[in-house]
Image (cartoon, rainbow, N blue to C red):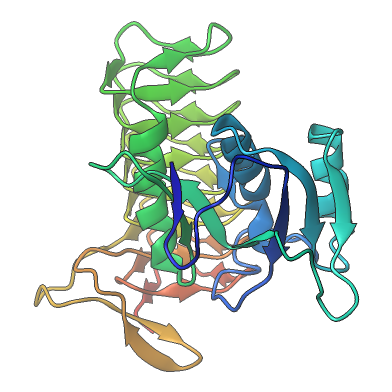
Length: 309
């Protein structure tokens, strides 16, 4: 059963038109550089968000006959058509008019099953910290056993504890500890003596020697050097973090962490929240980033910086 947190249930008894809508959010451009893709390409369990949602609907026996996308999303349209050739893809035209029996889904939402329930919902992601909430829901719903690809490499001295997925081409070095639920994407490498837990690691991520990664989301193709500590953080694609970098996640006074949106500090509702590091950013060695800080896409942070603004 699927429930929408803000709309009516989908109907599985007849063919359905799925209408993907763009809505206001604070996530576009953080993760992926292609102009017409934005949040639709957020990597969920190794798949772009929009493909993940379609696959989930089909697995739940929803009969999707066609998908209506916003105008000027040609790369997304082509990607869907390549993966689901039997589904017709249309653009929203005529002032946004769509069939009366259609079901609308925001592009910045994910279909998931919150922990402790048997009901699938569509959960919207508006703020960066929503990514972490959704990540934990997806990990708990989708990873219930340990599945290690035979095309991956896990050292004999490594410890894998709890349910996890280690995908094709991934490698886990000696004396590393992996604690699930966790997803380690294709061709991702976890260095010697590192501790990685309750995270989602996108494809082609490299974690260096003796790092700690906890409750964090990596879009993919990011390099983390040695002795880094990344906690409750979100990293876009193509980032580089030098050695001894830390994303702190708790305020000294233990108060709720605030995050700046358009120059205004807003409450995240969380007492543990690290950093949001935009795509293409480079963080110099020895940098410390205080809780709730945003590093804009394509930033360069000089070595030894304490990022407090």
